[in-house]
Length: 560
Image 1 (cartoon, rainbow, N blue to C red):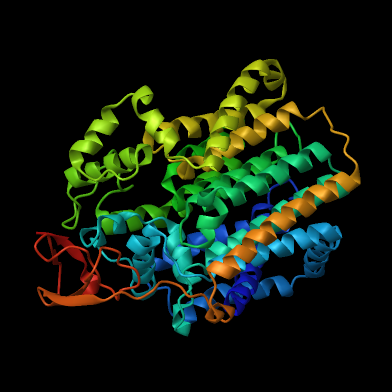
Image 2: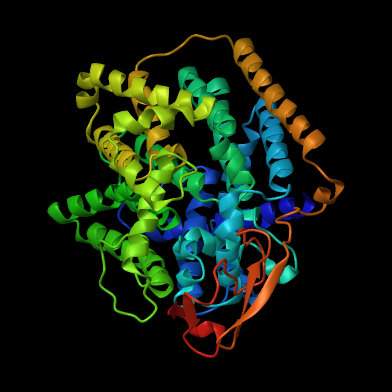
């Protein structure tokens, strides 16, 4: 836990300073940028680091100690600026304004994250390919044809690049949950700030209740906060990006955001897609203002969004091509490369079909089952899908359906709400349709789902307020605090070892064997197909389906 706390401080400081530098850069337009809340600044900085680290990962391994200095040195620029004290004063004020009960709630939530993220990692995806992908980025530059060792090595989202950078493998410790838990640290700071503002400051108490509901449901639903804290999964991280974008666009209640706000929202939307491809429709947030800029002859806005988008997407696309031979794996819709390490087209399509079928009915493996499920209409697969959902996720889905009906009943209010709310709703609705068609597991669509519910609620309660005494609000927060504390106690009793006090337990080592594959030593787990932290190169296959492209691991692999 001590190691995690130190990582929180370091990563937060780095991302906060990079966030300020990036926000200063995009505020060179005619409009003066209003600096957002602390957590949004941190996410912005992390996004800038993501792009730079992604570009570096194409040429260098990111697990070396000297890579950290490439990101530390630019931060020093902030301390030599004349207005640097103002940034720290704003940061101090944000935390000074917290009510005592809000501080207690925040502390309890952070304690929960510490306890959970320091426990043994058992998430199947992290054991299956997350940890291995991160290892490759830590130890090698982008390697051609990794997909041939394990099909899911083809998923080259830049979140794994971030995890490699902030895993600090050069210390000899395993930091698989450090970055995820840091982002949750920011998430709870943001939620507590919004609850505090609306309950105890100048905000609306009805909005405070909505923020409180988000805290409750995101903590209750396993695949949101709890899964994120105990794995390297990017699913909920991408959802948080969408929620932040919505907040940025609706916060000021203006008909048309200034150029700097558009630039920030556009940048975050593109980064979100490089983190998790399932949120692809959020790219509308970048495309629409760019189009508006072109139509209204705001050439600077258009080219800035275009340039930022190209720079951001480049490492994601290049890593996909180097690893799989496809621009966006596992999609074959954009098939423009001809390289010797290209993954088999039929197997790529099968992987995409598997994702869709698994999201509808977890547990299917056989190709005939996959094809059968994907041929079903919604009326056939939805009953089984519903049965497999947790209670928390069923509640979220119920509120989503209710939000659709409320939106229809409030269509006049929506039409009068202005361009931005309408644009956001259309974008989120597009995201929900994309999610439902391609991979309807709730964890892949929480950004659009929660976002749609939030925006509809925001519009419904814009002109309404709920009169609640301050003592009742405090009682609500105390009950939530007690509930989180009780669950934390449960974790302490059942999932805690004294070694966690110093550092996270990480992934348990598994027995593996080593075999020769045309002169390259390859490792493979003995007992199961969970590769975990088995030393790379590692595979769950044998050497009959792939071969090295050269005499070194860096030369990559190809199909036989």
